Amino acid sequence: MEITAEIKDRLSLLQEKYAAMGQDITAYLDGLLYADYLTYWDYIHLDTLLSLQHPKTSYPDEEIFIMYHQITELYFKLALHECRQISANTSLTPDFFASRLKRINAYFTALVSSFDIMVDGMDKEQFLKFRMSLLPASGFQSAQYRMIEIYSTDLIQLVTLSKREQLKHATPAEQFENIYWKYGASELSTGKQTLTLQQFIVKYAGQLLQLAQNNIDHNFSSLYKTLLRRGEDMSAVEAELRKLDLFVNVEWPLSHYKSAVRYLERDPVDIAATGGTNWQKYLPPRFQKRIFYPYLWTEEQIEQWGKSWVMNVLKAYRT
Ligand code: HEM
Image 1 (tube, rainbow, N blue to C red):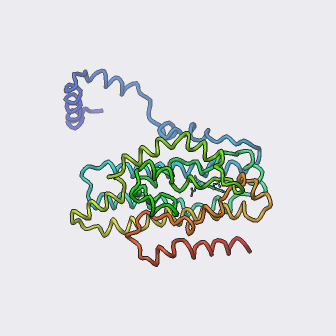
Image 2 (image 1 turned 180 degrees about the horizontal axis):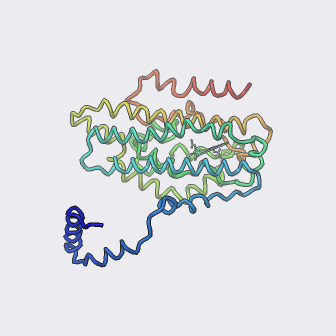
Image 3 (image 1 turned 45 degrees about the vertical axis):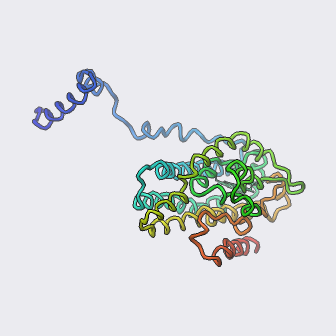
């Protein structure tokens, strides 16, 4: 085959590139010569990915439970990838902000619409058995989920509802001490923190507080207000922030709550399967009223936060 002018051109560009770093191009051409062709399976580490499912029991549906959690964590990772790009951008524009929020919302659309894989996709009898072998582990211990929240808003919005007003001017450390999830995964009878929650705090509390402190001026709510003060047109960002608020604080929690109702509510094993926690009071969005951007909603919308949805969910599964 002829060495065309185009190839010669590429070679001289390559030579310039390597010469600039004091490198000899021939050694790198040898590298190309000896290297294997890249395959799909090596590039995405498919064998490793498919080897990460290790059920603790022999109930076949446990694999569905593991894989769907893994899929969710990968979507959370995609969302965090965009969170970091927004928060670290030193010349943030409304266009960039809105386009990255759109991506995060696309991931949550996928998560919400696929949650039926959990709600209807496992045999209840199998679930109630294999779930017992997994205690005290719980999706409650998903640190990525908590990080998405921290990137999304001011720490005060994540404080438990009954203390939100009172801790408005408190330090980040005091607010973090009263973050809403410290009131979940607690024993139903005594209110004591379960081992699930205690272990999560030991492993992640320091890291999460640090993230919140680093993001005081760079979480989405702060960044929105900064750009607004600068006189930018924030309408596209506002629309995406509203969607994000509903996805993270109403739609995903409700899809997830549906699965808790389906598997845990009607059965007497209910209490045992969660280690006897307060989940029925804790999980529904209407009790928690976690809202990232209250200033983007009307008083009535805030009042109705999550309400009609919860009633429909319960109606569907109590019959
Ligand atoms: C059949 C499926 C599921 C059931 C029955 C279920 C049940 C529960 C329960 C009862 C809680 C409350 C914590 C407690 O009281 O111990 C919880 C929390 C949680 N679960 Fe699940 N879960 C399921 C699937 C998932 C999946 C697939 C994920 C994805 C990562 C997940 C992530 C979470 C998160 C992030 C929390 C904390 C929610 C919050 O703090 O508001 N769960 N789950």
